[in-house]
Image (cartoon, rainbow, N blue to C red):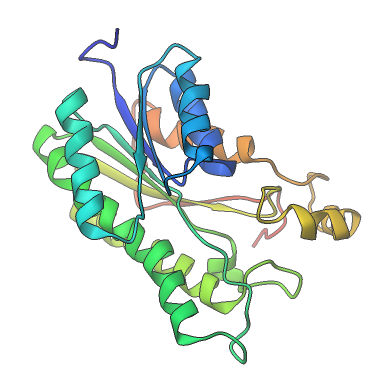
Length: 251
């Protein structure tokens, strides 16, 4: 039975990859966790895996680009658990086509999921966090937001633009929601997930050669940084962008 003083985290895109790893890390740290993703067997399986750890879980199937649905999901979490302490905005889609090939619809969909989805969830949880005078928001961006997509990258310019928008959103909200709510961003580098596995497998040694720490990253490498930003006390970090790339893009 969950205790009412037990903290609550929401993780979007939690069905697999970085989202599932982040949700699992929060669960291990004693959080009740609500997992948001498109309604699928993956989401139900992820929710069951977390429940097996002995923590309270919720499944929130739906599209993060649907503003009304996100508002309803946030309200459902508060209705069940009475609070939202942490939001991890991880949901995102790849956009592999270059400017000469991408359609307007593909551009719009990339922005709707990657950037508007992040806004939708921030908009949904911010009022309660401000009212409680406590909250943490962690937005998952990408090193591509500042470097541009490498020639071998899975995603091209549209993805880079959407992830750069997340950095602006993060910095703006860090000022607007201070002093009680911290807002930070994490920028993964070369991380092996379901989206990148085929590319990494084809070029593994070449990619590793560009990473000072000598290996490809894992979802768990991102999850531990997310959990740090979500739980560190005392906290004097907001508006920051943390690259987690093994030193690949040191500047």
